[in-house]
Length: 285
Ligand code: PLP
Image 1: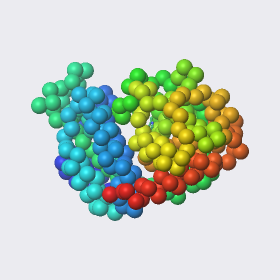
Image 2: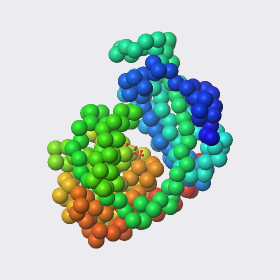
Image 3: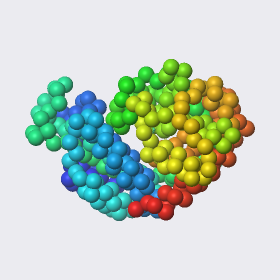
């Protein structure tokens, strides 16, 4: 049984409770982060803490904890749950007012709710990193502030189900003919030694792994071009891959049933994965 953190308390997972009036539950009025854990240490905690701060700020939501407290809670959960590899899920919502109401409650009267829990998972040796994954394309019908990491994940969940039904692993979302991102990851193609990924804007989540991987790619003398691309261009590329905190870098080998490059995981994607894991292990804290 896991120990989880809820509003200042560490509790067994079956004793932790959140109000039925919590706005995260009623309105998806909340933000989240997932920080990966390698060798019992946190990968890029600072990046996740900064993005959390930004998400909270954009929604005018107060944080119930400081960044130092957040780090201490993450570390405590890793320790009490003896987590060697996996992730820590963190969610902050606008709290539980006395009744359901569309208007935001007064933060002086209704403090934000905060929940954290650990998830053990095989990250570095995930089998899908060796085989590569298949994706289908679906229309991106999400709201216009995808840069904020909110808990409104119904459409991404539906996207995963559409992929599953089609016998694929994930879906890439397309808007105005161009790929925005995967349901829970950023999307890339490779042409020669050039890595192409959509530019940052409100249309996509500003992936913490994306930032690290693009920096490492540049350090490894690879060229990076931040621009949109279509499904047709991706199908004709040499390689494709995704990044996220819990998948790191994973090759994409088919898109809508069409093989990318040789149909095998690409060299550049696998090299970036290797460099990323190596650096993450070194810098994790
Ligand atoms: N894009 C979306 C829609 C996501 O949900 C995620 C992660 O959950 C990402 C991109 C990747 O972000 P990160 O690398 O910070 O995990």
